[in-house]
Image (tube, rainbow, N blue to C red; front, side, top):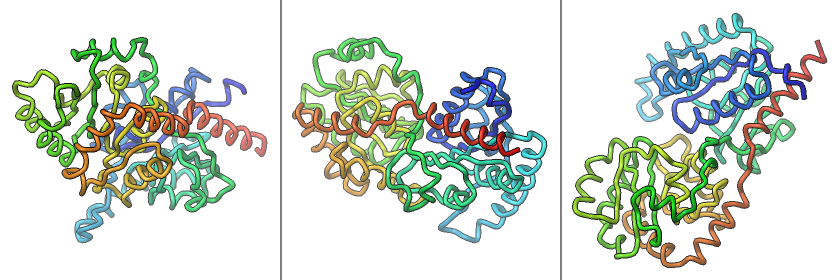
Length: 373
């Protein structure tokens, strides 16, 4: 396929790392095919993409869009005004930038931007990261020319003829580690010959997971198990108080080198965000998923269930974590065969090269429109 197919590409979405990392991966794959391609991101003002995207070397424009408050509907009057302003601004961006295609990765900004593109006759591609489709993508699906999904069975949400199973793009750096698991443990300050559990709750932390680990440390750390614990910002003090005087646990607000941490971990405890699950699948890590109940449409539970039903991960609901999480960690740490079984099954669900597959789909759309002009 020609490198010159990609000239002017619009990518919209963000709000969380789970949306931003795939968007940047797609942009990088486009740039590999045509280094001169002009790529413009559209994000939401005040959200993390407004910093992360420029840091990666791409231009971004922000919309004054905000999410709806589904519990307190009276608070949505200002949100509607912001949405109206965002729609007008998105129309202007599409008119002035004149993209060949608009790619939406989910998040507040993708709705107005992709809708403006569709209204202007610009072909659109949606990337749905979860096993349960988001509201924005469901609204945009009827006029989308391709919908790239990470899970099979998504025809219950989208027209079957436009679905392509691609997987979710993940950070390439996760696979650029030459260390053995033992070397990775040693580099992180752990005993290379003892099992290491890594607990992550996202960049902001997960209160239920943090309090459960803190309360269960004496039981969890039985003289053999070691713990790498990412508390997030909100759980920093919980971690500091819990690990005083302990040599077999390290609590940190943020793990900067996730590639080494993943390589070192014998077992991972995590929330069930789509991006994280894709990483775990590609790396084949035995995992306990504790889905967050505080997300739209309970999509993390549905993500986790898609793995648990295939015996590719253990799932513990947030409400059950205080009772069940530490015993389940101890069970899997003590049972290497059970961990191997989970590892083999989660690896079967992996879809590598998702960024290239998505860009292939975008390229086919652009070529089709060039031929019809």
